[in-house]
Amino acid sequence: MTKKLITSTLLLLTLYCSAIFASPTINEFDRCKKLSVAMLEYCIKDESYNDNKSCWDRSRGSYEDCYRDVFKEHSRDSKLEKLRKREAIKKHREMLKNGKVAD
Image 1 (spheres, rainbow, N blue to C red):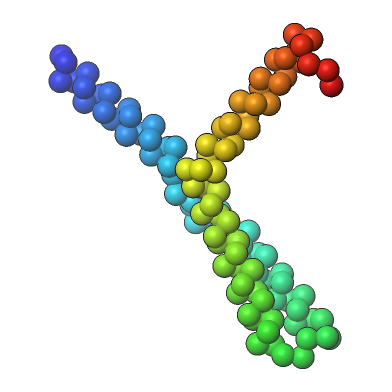
Image 2 (image 1 turned 45 degrees about the vertical axis):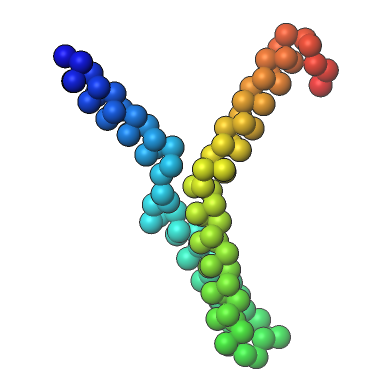
């Protein structure tokens, strides 16, 4: 009985921890692709840029920045920051509800 309890507890902890520290999924990078393509199209249409290589470089740079941002959103620090912010907002709303803080 205790062996099953330990096994199920470990399984639940594993699932919980993997949910907290999840990696980005492939569809989260779609916005990076769209941004990169839009930047490239705009740059090529813009008459002030005569060099397509600079357009490609700018487009690639925007993709790489976006790519890094997606990974940052899934970092442990980012998740903790979001959790702290939610808790602070929740606490502030409770204080407003109880009339302890002025708007």
